Length: 197
Image (cartoon, rainbow, N blue to C red; front, side, top):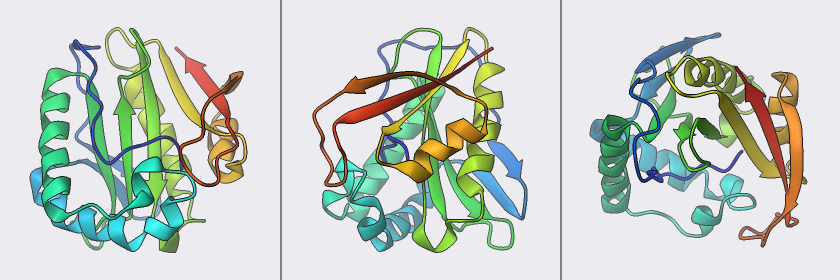
């Protein structure tokens, strides 16, 4: 789990005139699809079902989102996609096209020319390389966008499964910064991993 939120965190202006693919096929019968309003109910169910799994690392997982809140966030994500500031995806199983087994995003919150990948995968689907495969595909998609030259993955230094993903994908550990923890398992030391085009 890397710093992803269920909502988009739009940047002030478009980061890129391009858009990533709306559907990305991953290995082993998994796909990433652009999040839509129609996904709201199943995303809400998946989020609520995984709160105990997410709470140690995600500030927003302290309490369950209402279905209405998830719909509002989906609408914000649609606007952010259209504005070219954030690109929100859901991971699903090909055998169940509307399923939600994780959430991913390319977030424009780290400055010009860069996108941050955030992610979580449901507890029942960890260990299948879904996050690793999705992060690899999103890295390629981000660096293919006009004006994007850097991708980052950020996580707390104690979140070893999350840190293994950028390490596996050939990211460089750019720096470790101190921050104020906002979730129970966080140490206050953030790893910032980068990959450049």
